[in-house]
Length: 203
Image (cartoon, rainbow, N blue to C red; front, side, top):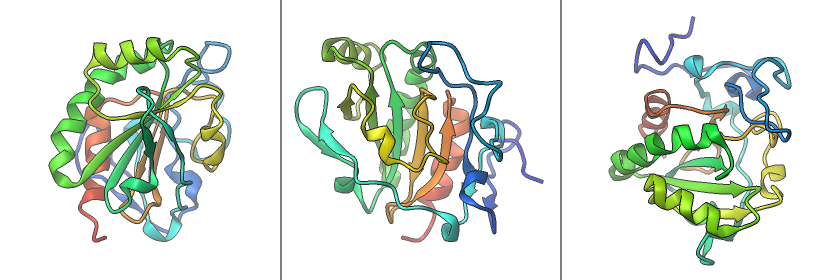
C-alpha cells in the first residue's frame, strides 16, 4: 500500500501500472469557476496525499510546449531537457492558484541546486498585466508561458493533464517524460518528495 505524503517523505515508485495511476485530481477549478473534486474525469484518480512517481517504463514523453513568457521572451520545455522540470498551470483569476503559489516559489528556490527547474503555463489571462502582478505578488522566480486560450494544455495526454483542472502540476524527468501529475492545488510538502524522487534518478 502506498504511504501518504503527509505521513512520510518516502515516495513509492508505481511499478507495472498504466499512466492513469499517476494522475492526481485534488479538485481543480473548472471552466465554470466551480470545482470538480467530486467528479473525477476517469478511473485511477488519486488524491494529492497519495501521489506517486510513475515507473519509467510507464511514462509518456511530454509535448514540446513553447511560446513567449509574460515579458515577451521565448520559453520552452525543450530548452530545459536534461533537468527535472516542474510544470505548473495557473491563472491569476484562480483562487487555488493563489493558495499554492507561495509554496511553489519557496520550493523552486530550494531545489534549484538539485537540477530542478520550474516552468509555468499561464492560462485564461487575456491581460498579461494581471498575470505579471500575480508573479510579483507571490515572488515567482521562474518563467511562465502565456497561453490565454489554453491551446498548450491540449497538447498533453488528457489522462495526465485535464485542461479543466486549474491549477495542475506535472513533474517531467531529465529525459523529458512525465513522471508525476497532479490535477488541482498542491502544497510544497506534497510536491517536494515527488520532485526529489525524480531528481535522484539516473539520467
